[in-house]
Image 1 (tube, rainbow, N blue to C red):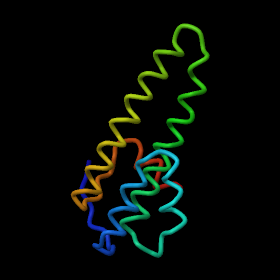
Image 2: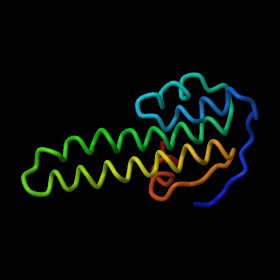
Image 3: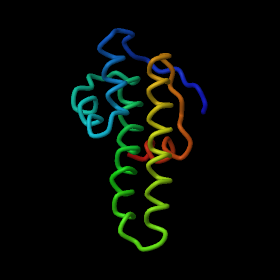
Image 4: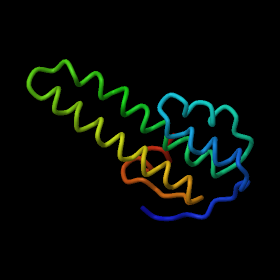
Length: 107
């Protein structure tokens, strides 16, 4: 997880919106309320990728045999990435989460 320096406002609003990025469907709030704050936009895009991953994991559940295992693994990965993202926001850092950031850059 590389640490990047992003321009952004260092206020409470920026931290709250950044944290909302990693709380499931609430990732859309920072995307809509972003006013050219790179810090918020960075975290909102990563949060969107994590949320999409969690939605897609539900579709794996009905497959017999491997479905429950795949869903459980995806749920664990989503939980870990969300926790890492929240810690990153609290520390005012821009950690590039593995796999998630590579997809988020393309959005």
